[in-house]
Image 1 (tube, rainbow, N blue to C red):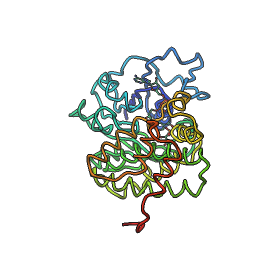
Image 2: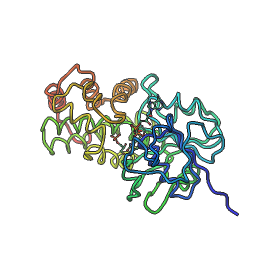
Image 3: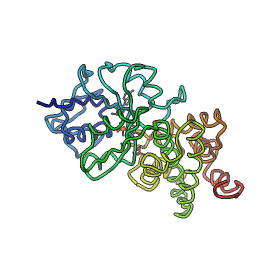
Length: 323
Ligand SMILES: NC(=O)c1ccc[n+]([C@@H]2O[C@H](COP(=O)([O-])OP(=O)(O)OC[C@H]3O[C@@H](n4cnc5c(N)ncnc54)[C@H](O)[C@@H]3O)[C@@H](O)[C@H]2O)c1
Ligand SMILES: O=P(O)(O)OC[C@H](O)CO
């Protein structure tokens, strides 16, 4: 008799809830850890994903699961370390957040490696709006682990016909793509908010790919990863999809709302805000030029306005496209 896979999802925000639903669809026995399970209504509707009820087969509690075959960490990046420290190291762990830890400049797996030095670790990333995954709409993502065989094995535990999980053994490239696309999405939103036009946004996205490729290379990632789901795939979604929180943050800033006020008005976490300065520092440490990330960092800090931001990017020298 085959044993039913037990998957523990840590974090009941929009993404954790969607992943819990997906894991159940993949045939797993699912438990969802919520900081505040009482916030869920009697109809088991999660506050961060309104309209999606959880089936009774998914256990929701504020007690960390002691037994699992796989643990998905779906909290915001800046809370990953504190949350992970409370997780028992009973199974392989997959980081599902996108960002860079501001205090250390570390990527999600680097944070987890410090806490779980002996565990199998992976990262999940790609163009995935939580509400679409929750609805079971078709989507694809990438699961990366340093070990190619483990990456495929872990991906298989969550894959269904509608949610296609590709495996990768380039966690650095995958994490860089997931973290940086949120920063670029803020720039794309600001471009549209300031009515600079669709041409400007397309140019910005494309030139950002060159910028991210340089940075990924400097950090040890492989260039082809950025042309995949965690790179171009997620850039396309987040820089053009009106549901993106990072895009919406940029949109408000481009329309003239001060960055802090725009962030306060946002429902849910816009990871690009904390990640922009962390990524800029990382890029500087590695000698990689990142004009878009630098401009977004200044825009978020309020040290430049939208006119300055577009002037900064437009005044850069125009050289060979692939120099
Ligand atoms: N929402 C999506 O469409 C989506 C898709 C893919 C990846 N992600 C990534 O998943 C991660 C989580 O995003 P989300 O959309 O679920 O967030 P969310 O905005 O829906 O919810 C944030 C969650 O963080 C929790 N939280 C707040 N303070 C906390 C703390 N101190 N410690 C632990 N948890 C705390 C809140 O209770 C809430 O559940 C982010 O890194 C995001 O980039 C999100
Ligand atoms: O709403 P955002 O901007 O956090 O984007 C959500 C997902 O990361 C899209 O892949």
